[in-house]
Image (cartoon, rainbow, N blue to C red; front, top):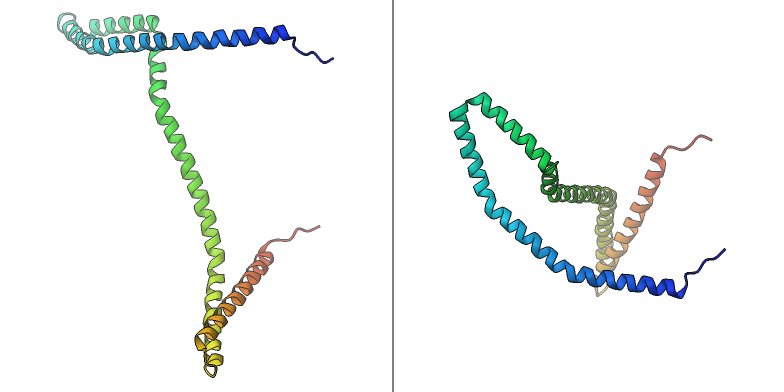
Length: 191
């Protein structure tokens, strides 16, 4: 059974989304303003609260002694915990969030760099012997080009062509030997 929404249903949804979007745009500015005013007020008052708390604690230590002050601080802390449940945990989570995110990003980047470095090193280890063979082939090809090109009137061209051909042939041989060596090292399945 295929149920398709009616035109009235679609119009209601469009009107709902329009009103919701309009109210969100209109109310977002005042909400941000109120939050910023409250935060500014808190930041302006907090140093005085902190100094008052320290003076009160010192006064209580002087008048009532260490044990009575400890009991009063415990009661004060319990009262704060009832008024602001888990405020410290939430504040700590907010403070930790950017550092955790940055740490995870750095760890991911380090993992990617390590993986790429491993792959680059594997390619370098594979290409190293092939490059050595190619350079040897170029030197031998250049030597043959010099020997063959000397009687000719253009030894530079003969040397360059023979060096390139020698390098290409030696590189091809190096690739074939490398593939053969890798196949010989792999264990075969018994079956």
